[in-house]
Amino acid sequence: MSERTILTFFLLITGVMLLSQKNVSPSYAELRKKYENLEKEDTAALPYVSNFIQKAKKENNFEKLCLGYKDAVFFTTDAQVKLSYADSTIAAAFKSKKNELISDAFLGKGIIYYFNFRKFQLASDEYVKAHQYAVKTDDEYLQKKIIYHLGVVKSYLGYYSKALQLFNQSIEFNENKAKNETNANLRFNYCRGYLNSLHQMVICHRNLNQNAKADSLLDVGLSATKNKSEFTLERAYFLKCTGIIFYKNNQYSDALYYLKKALPVIEQKNDFTWAAVIHFYLGNIYLKHGDDRKGIMEFKKVDSIYNKHQFLLPEASDSYRSLIRYYKNRQNEKEQLYYTDQLLKVNEGIRRDFSYLAEKIYEDFEIAGLVKEKHQLEKSITLQKMTILLVFILSSGLILFLIRRYRKREQNLKQKYAELILRLNIAQKPEEVLPQPQAPSRNKNELPGDLVRRLKIKIQYFEDHHQFLEAGLTVVKLADRFKTNPNYLSAFIHDYKGAHFSIYLMNLRISYITNKLNSDPNYLKFTVKALSQMCGIASRNNFATHFKSVNGIGVSDFIKMKRKDIKGDL
Image (cartoon, rainbow, N blue to C red):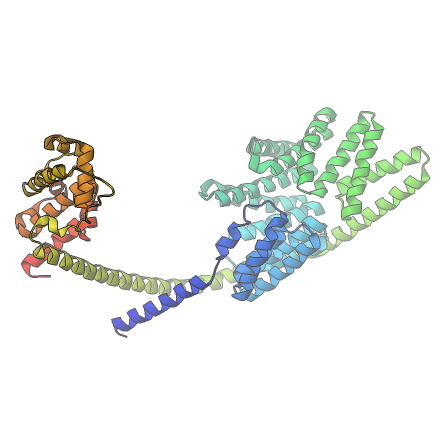
């Protein structure tokens, strides 16, 4: 295929791309920019998210469609609608045929089941599916994120030692990434992953009665989140753990302080699971202080959370035992019966969820490691072949691009040089190479006729005798030399030379040196700095900039082309 054919094809493709870009508006980035900084569950974002999704559907861009559905999950307030968008994300991910998107979509659905519904059975199924696809990718962050969520489930099941192993993996990964990451958003995600894993480890060590380790990690978490407004929620979890530890050590006043400090933040983030646990401990603290009324109110708040979400941690379920004892002592059989029935429902839910998970999730997760090992071996062989081919293609393309770019630049320089030489050869005087000034505007500057005549003579003498080469020359100095007012001289230059004084002076100097370079080969031996000083311009950079502005070609390129011209190589 000839070079002309390749060039024609390249220009055709470029034109089609530019035309298509012109018709597609706005872009995905522009659409997301309208809502990406809004807070979670801010429904004001949803119209823009809808536009993003429609654009992705229209263009069959399944990767962007996944992103749009994930945004919809993030900004939607209704849990059922979140679940519907999560299913749409999974469908789009499968159409993309990208394992990382499929894995992330299943993980997202699992998180909704876990956080919004507290349905461990359904959440665990989604996590296992997510892990099966994640091990087929090189996305270590995604793999560790799934491991973290599986660790949370293990911790809730009471498998604290196994959960600690997973959280240790998550902490090591996120801590190392956060130290070396320069991107602020990514560093924030790694830090948050590290702090959440740290919080879960504190819970595991506390439940294993490894109090020294729990206290040590808790100090790390409190120190890492101190005065960090971006980690307010994470700090609240550490304050919650601190309060519980104080309670276990019978330090009820300190426990009350930390738990009440953590509660508003956790409630604001709608983490009803830990909110219920805090209300449980607050109730016990008030009972210890002899304030039965406040204690019972806290336990009733636990019951209110259960009625709304149909979920409690076993830790908080003891609230019902306190309520039953309280109303039994007061011989209130109606309330006693109600809370007995509630406790039976809570225990049935705990038994159902935990027994299911204990039997199912872990073997599936452990077997997935073999899938990952097999995939890595297959991928390594394929990657070696693809790398060699890719390097060859990229190298060839780069070389071709550089050659064509160099040729295009050389052709452009030849054209600019030829145009300048033609102007220089036609011009009778150096200044004739410059743009011709416009006719004087009498409406702007009404100068006396005799003054104009005198200034014309002086300016002509100034130009003919190359007085413009004097360094440091200003309109004030020249006006003083002409024995006239600087304002009059500026007005005259503007009207009869078509430019402000500084531009007029610069053009004269550039025109002078350009003619010298064209007519006297000795000038081609000087450096750019020396040439700038010869024509009265102190700054080498200013000289080079104005030379190109006036002549359409850089001074170094002009010298190079002129030398070739003299040798007959041009």
